[in-house]
Image 1 (tube, rainbow, N blue to C red):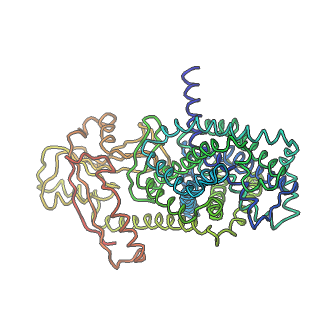
Image 2: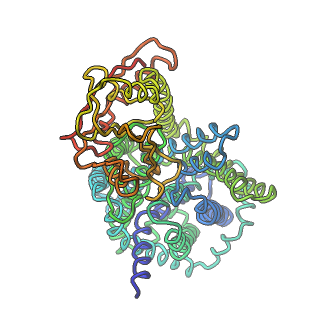
Image 3: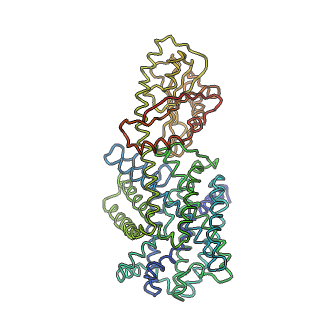
Length: 629
């Protein structure tokens, strides 16, 4: 095997271990939930079983195979996926078109709802696996929640090691898992080959026409078979389209189809099997080992949404929707693989709280689906904008995609609205809370920037006044991180006005986040002498994608090698001056009082710019200033 093929095989295995954990464990609870809704409204008769199997199969086909794997994966933002990256791509391709802000807000809402899913998925996945003890060893049923809690604690603690290492461990387990799904399902199909008729869409149509209300309610549970589709898209930046598509069509999709068919055959054999069709599909001697394997697989399912939440959080920081977070890069080769400690432990606390509040997968299933289907609809809406503006799809193609895919998702969304009073409010509440945080931070940054700008004054006027002053030019290089070249950094102004000194070389650096994931090195740095080449003052713009770490000393080193050598930039001996704002609550207009307090709390807990920009602490001076909010 060549090195290139070996690398592809490794990436395929890792992708299998991270991307498909969530959707790959849906057979644990999806069909069981369908047959338990409304005290058995869906009956274990041939017509109902074939109808449900058909609904599940065609839901997976349309939403996952067609929408996400075939089409939506094409809508990457320079290799990055997820509803946030999709919204940023829409904003970029639309330019200044009216309605752009509303579409971006739609993307922010979709990303916020994804966090709600990220809290419920680990809880329902791990609980559903450990509940297999109730089938294989009923005497241990009281240990389900404690065992699940220990497993989840270990999973979140392991995140610091990075997605790549976790994926290397999980990949082989998922190969075994999908092989077990396929073999068990195949056994059921061999015993009752007539169940293959359930693949015909006519059974789904007949089920809906014969029992419209029951089918409508059942759709709220059928959607559990496609949980993880949005996480699949969010993890695009970790692995790329190729491995994700090959894993889906080569292994995951066939294994899921066979397993759902096998469960349907089992229910037809004995209606009592609908209480736990997944575990009863296996012979008695294999059930306890399958509990262990299922537990491992559901841990992997949790990994898919956790890594997706890390990606979404990082994108939100770069787009100015969240305060600076500590972000650790966990792979030297894959820039998209990150670990966000704050998000990790907030998710962990939320997952434990949800699991204790809904201590069974059946109860959690009632809380699941509303935010999932909402995110599906948002992704479809944004994708249609990209298809029209960027790919020039004709109106008929947009209409077909919107009616078939969007119509199905709208039906699933409506069906899941019936769950709101029974727990569906929980992920919606989480999503609304995150949306409020993101929009508050975005608005607060705008207000603070406007007021700080008024204090700073225009940079050209400051440079002009400096040339005519008697300021002492002391030796050395002073670097001032500053968001724009329109105004003078407060630290630079304070040093001049109070100490009457200016360094011989002054470098003002603006770190700019773009609406793309990555910026090539040749396009990262640009310089502006601000009108004078002999005053030792220069402005640098360092452009970064929203997936990249903003390392200011590294940007200076790049500038020293690529730009005019007369700039004389020495990042390893320079002193760094940071303007640290102290925000004070005031009665100034711009935001409501409660949102001001929320913004202040977020700003207070944000990491220092010294840490965020990787500045050397021994050569960094922090100068404070006060800004009214």
